[in-house]
Length: 130
Image (cartoon, rainbow, N blue to C red; front, top):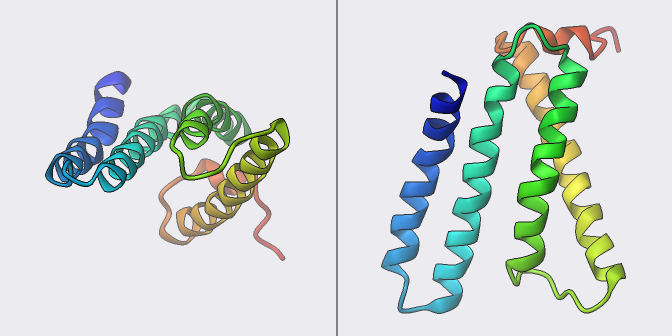
């Protein structure tokens, strides 16, 4: 059941953005950028099913989600052509961007999840008294 949900959550944006990439196939850079974005959207969307596993703690869900993003999104960023990668230091800079943006998005999503009661586990990890 989770695999089906993952394919649906990741597949919808992938198909929509893939169709947009096909539309822009005359412009290689636009098509490639849109296709890379669709791969990222697929990975992120599919990985959200991790948060439906209720018997896992929120820190475990978050850690597994981070690892999935690390093995899917980070390589896409490296090979997308969006960043100049000529040294190992350049790859570390992309990793820093990846982690920084990930933390910001994670914190925003925790706040939204708590505000709209999307996830009961989020309250078990983040204190709400500050």
